Length: 206
Image (cartoon, rainbow, N blue to C red; front, side, top):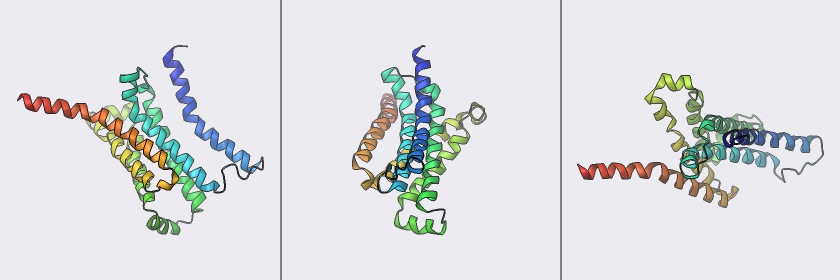
């Protein structure tokens, strides 16, 4: 098995693992009698866990270009899979919130948003992910041509919204919020600073 095939297998396992983890947790709570498997607040624990996985996949998408360039780790062929996994778990995160926290009581949603505005920020991030998920195929890439790349640059404002969503509920984990902010800052610098530097050099040579 070559390196790329091994990477492909690892990515598939990584994509499936959170869902398998949730299934195992459900089994432990419902059938094995371990009602404290998710701690004293199981609903919140499940929602937060799914959200963290969604964030992890989306930030991994941001990292693919730099992993290839600096570490010779080519995840570019799996980028679509990782992005769709991030979108899927973001939707599942939202579904778990409405099911486990709100109990599908939709009238409580507006009240909850008023108390916790970070929920609205998270919803906006998911809405911005939607057109990228829909147009992730090669067919859409051919159809949109240059506009496709511009559309998929939305991943960068989405990353900022995710960080805002995370920091607004910082009690969920200061270390996580800090480390994710540092990671995204590094990725933004690696992505945009060389381009700005090249533009500045071009302008100075005119």
